[in-house]
Amino acid sequence: SSQVLVMVEDDPGQVSADFGVVQAAGPVALSKTIKIVNKGAAGVRYALAYQPITTMPGVRYELSSSSIEVGPRQAGTVTVTLRIDDPSALHRTPDPTIETLQRGAARQFLPDASGRVVLTPVPGAPPLRVPVYAAPRPVAGISVPERLSAGGDRRAVLTLSGRGVDQGTGAAAYRSLISVLELQAESAQLPECEGPILLGCTPNGTATGGDIRYVGVMSTAPLARGHGRPQDALLAFGITTWGEWYNVGSNIVPFIDIDTTGDGLPDFEVRAMKLPGTDVLVAATMNLRAPPGAPPVAVLPVNGQFGDVDSGVFDSDVILLPVTLTALGIDPSAITAPIRYTAGTLGFYPGPVSVGAVIDSTAPAIADAVRPAVWAEGAGDPAVTYLARPGTALIVNRDPLAARPARLLVLHPGNPSGHRVQLVRVPGVGSDSVDGPVVPVPVPAPLPRVARPAGRLGSGARSAGP
Image (cartoon, rainbow, N blue to C red; front, side):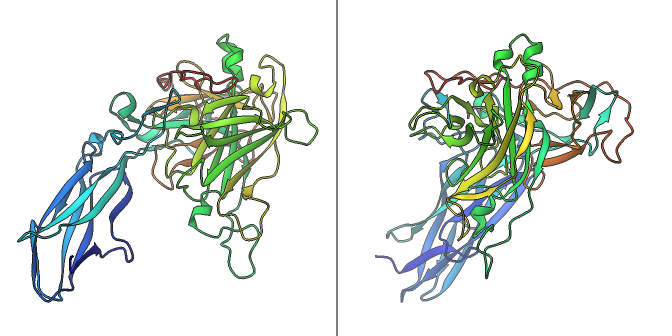
């Protein structure tokens, strides 16, 4: 019953004013132009207002006008502006319609500020509505030196600098995090699938979120033994990709195949997935030698945290897949436990000529699950992820009898796009053979321990520590 069309002018073919993911390192002001097209033979006049549905502290929308007149067969425009004056005011508030707990575990969620621009005709007639959406988040600017400072063969210091994020309380908090792994694999960027290139390529932007860039590994076994809890020892694999994924655990599924017996065949697979019927993202470990339909031998939260801690699982390109050593049948108190593993990604959009749903995979790498070449520690219990605050540091321990890795893989999940991954050279390898002095600095405080979900998620299920 209306002769008027309303749409967003900036994005042809799209009706909504969609600002997408907004990474706020400072004040933000982003605008979209809404076009009103009158197809009728009479002029129209509308009162304009923004109607919120889901709100976030520190976020507001403004309209350039409170009313507009459009002549017959004419067009007019109005601007809607997203404003964030102070990113430190942003809190991680869930949509009130979602379940924050599913199967006893905190689910991951993406906070958003959304609503509608409502055009109410004067005089009365059917109103028109244009959806408005944005997913703002504060981003950190944490970095570490390109080269590891060292004070001997066994211990080194990795000092953090830049801008951290630490705001809000409980599940509404945003805090910058850091993880340190041994870099074990690098993978070149896959070409686009076009012309004669049909194998080993990415057909679209979604697939680039499965194009592996770096792979690393860490073990908390030395620290767990030192704390008298060897049974809590974890092995965690880090995967970074050339593009950001839209929905990890669904349209992009990172996985690790692990050979613990040395026969060249994988015995276990750790895979990012969502618990059935939920949005709880976990690293589920399957025994590939078990009968079909057997339950996972371990289910742990990705990045070492459930959804009540923002560990950056959405619109990201870095992820940690942890597993307990006991779930792999490895004795954490053993002198050595070498494993061979490969990393890969599955997805809806592999290349036109591919092996199943595999987008990318790496060559086998070797690691020692109980005696890693390097391992990082902060204050408190062993962990795969630590709070990242400028001026603090992680202590990087090294096994003097192990082959020293050339570089560390450092993950900053709270940093903006293009700045979440750093490679750090290790002294004594290649041209970096001179150790620098150790400067006393405070170590990062532990993250709040995640409550274990009620009920049994799988053998060996527990939180990943601080």
